[in-house]
Each structure stands twice: as structure tokens, then as C-alpha cells.
Length: 203
Figure 1 (cartoon, rainbow, N blue to C red):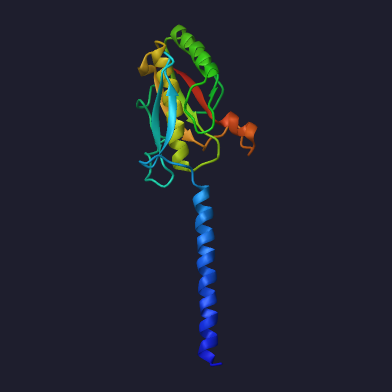
Figure 2 (figure 1 turned 180 degrees about the vertical axis):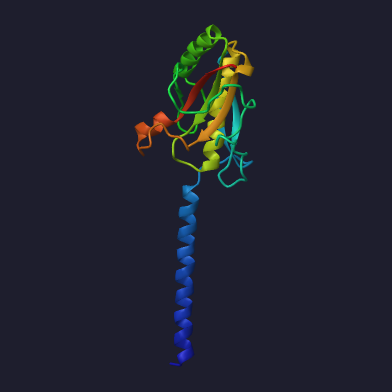
């Protein structure tokens, strides 16, 4: 047997092995991706005070940046900075509302809590609120910033629908950057999928 025949056989086997390895790797990578719509976006649903549901989309993980970060580290806003507004995660008079995984839809419980918030805001007419959208740690930074904004906007729009003036409400997103519970558990993730309300007085 000639030497180049032996080498040729070894090279062929190596090439086949590499091709199989690449195919297995590609299949695994494909299984890790979230399903997306044909336009490369994720679906999400919000609910209005009247009970109607509207579907919008979030940018896909593989797409370009979904927006810019504000100077306070939050993504997006409905308004510019409001006098006296303080974006923080400190407790306040308005309780958080929670969301299901990968959703910006308002549950019955969330709508009930927001109705109480609207009553409080009407009584405290000089208060302004920053509505912060938060997510759990799973998913990319861009995806969670977009989902957090959807959540903040859903809460803000519901409050506006209940008669709260829109110029008293600002929506921002922190995505997964400010968890209320840093643990990697289902319970912690449920706590972190929320809209948080920061109240300040209008100056």
C-alpha cells in the first residue's frame, strides 16, 4: 500500500467527522432559539381597561439594537424627565403588578391593582409616577429591554384609560438589569416580571 493512499484515507475520515460535528452543533443551536414571527419579531399582547386585547411585536434577539438607553440606564420613555421624578426601585404607595413569562398582558389581578392606583393618583393630584418595566434574567438584554417597555407602557396606558392624566406618567424599561430578587428560581423570576411605580411630587 502506498503512503499517499493511507494519508488520503485518514484525511477523508477526518473531513467526514468534522462535517458530522458541525451538523450536530448547528441542530443544537437551532433548538435554543425562540420561535419568531415571519418579520423576525416576537408577539406580545396587552389589555386595555375596556377588556380589549391588542397584539404588538418585540424585536428578535438576532436583530439590531431596539433603542437607546436613557441617561438613568432605562430604555425608552413616554415623556421627558418630569420635575421631581426619581427612577429607583425603592418601595412606595403603589404596589407592583406582575406579568406572565414573555408577556405584557395585564391579568385580572393587575387590572384590579391598577384601578386602585388610579384612585390614589386622582386623590393625590400633585404626584407624578415613573412606571418601570422589569423582566426576569432569561433572554437577551435587547429582548428584555423591549419587553420591559411593553410592560411599562401597558400599565401606563391602562391608567390613562382610567382617567389619570398622561402627563403625570412616564414609562421606562430596565429589562433584566434591576431584579427585585437576584435568585435564579421560578419564584424569583415571577417576582422580577413586574411593573414598578415610583412616585414623586410635582415641583
